[in-house]
Image 1 (tube, rainbow, N blue to C red):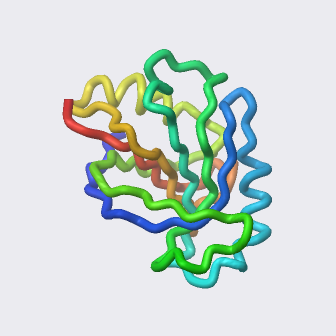
Image 2 (cartoon, rainbow, N blue to C red):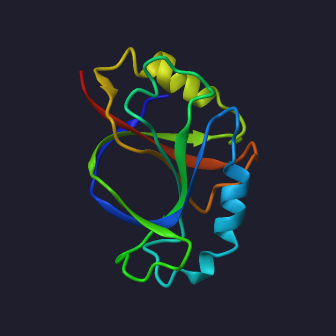
Length: 158
């Protein structure tokens, strides 16, 4: 599976976040809380949801599933001025991304194994220290084998 290399323009996001690890995954709780309040966000750029991970610069150096990262449940907004109580704004900086169009269950993590152990080491790119995210559009169906999403991995040339 070859990604599309894309130059992302800066995006304004609004959402909720929590610290977690893969061992102590709180994704279900985070998204449940966010989805119950999505109607409070006055305007959105699209109907897509964004699941974003912000990693410490050393996260992937000696990877362990017990390492913490910050997970966001959010949406893109044209202007992040009216942020509902209990939500925050985030400016997603632009830059190069490898975009993988993934079809399959979100519970299947083999796509990430492929990206980090096969595609990335054999490409002319390395990870850049910016957020990773998934765009969950109209064809996204959580844990459904027919689900589709875009996986955005921040990159820079080696």
